[in-house]
Length: 445
Image (cartoon, rainbow, N blue to C red):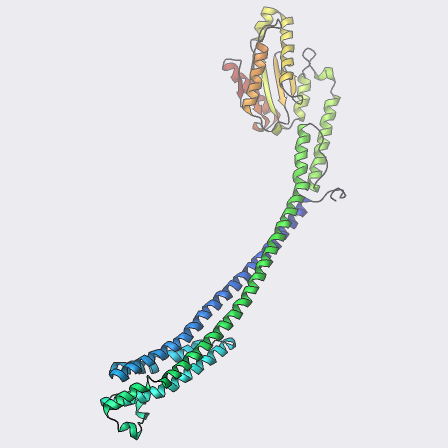
């Protein structure tokens, strides 16, 4: 569907949509996470509330049992300490009243609180029987210092006439008989019903919150899946409109061909600009007169061809090699210029066999040559050194009847130079450094 768009789809637009999409989904995830946090918080609060209500219910029963224990110990032994502890619990500690107050949270806890109030009513009712038992013991022991609340307890004439031991026995029976424990059972029954109400309430709350939690988790999962799909779609679009055209362009550049004008709008613009420069470059090469641009002896580009080639190269993707034949003057002097010419022809033939067809071999002086390795953004120095060594190895062979020779080479990447003149200067300096190092070698700069 992208080919139907004459100018292509803009990568800028795609990236804007990608950013907006990610912001929307990320914001949704953040909101969902807050909702999840809220649900977890409510579950935690419900658990804490459950614990609080359970403690409140048990607190009332514990307080009632404490009062029972103290009144029983007092009636059996008559120890005033238990009497004081009983009334301290009943009127100062107030654990029963506090339990009911803790249960009064909202309308939902009202049923449990009513059951607890019923237990409290039974406990208060039981206190009348406990007061009577304590008054019997006080009368039997002859205590004069006791809580004022017991002044309102009047013994019947029959009970008042009992002997001290009989009063003690009667008091003990009042807090240990079946009727007394029936009242205690009523308290426990009401407290258990209160606990049941609490469990029912908490169960409903937890079930509701867990349902919400499951819905929130499902929602988050859906968001994550949609977000992942959106990312994949955007990545796919970026790949189709940006990455793939770039990779194809690299292959075409390496093949010294025009770039397909496809993909995103921005890339199509670059491809069009490149293709225009490429066609001008190819036109310049095609328009070169072979004799005007090539050395008649060796078939390599001459100085004029070199200048034209150099004007059209891309420095960042070019390596320059400057080669000079070692001791070439002595060959001319010892073997004659005809043999010297054959040596130069052999050199160019060897260079063409070693370097790529895309690379340009130029004779810029008598025995001085330049190799322009174009479309070479990164070259392994070890590999290039191997090529140079192979060239020298071929030149040293004398099975063709020519004297063995060697070359000194300087190598510089166009990235190391600000312009083409500086590139040549640095390469020339590298070549002369090879000469100084004993010739028959190479120097990288």
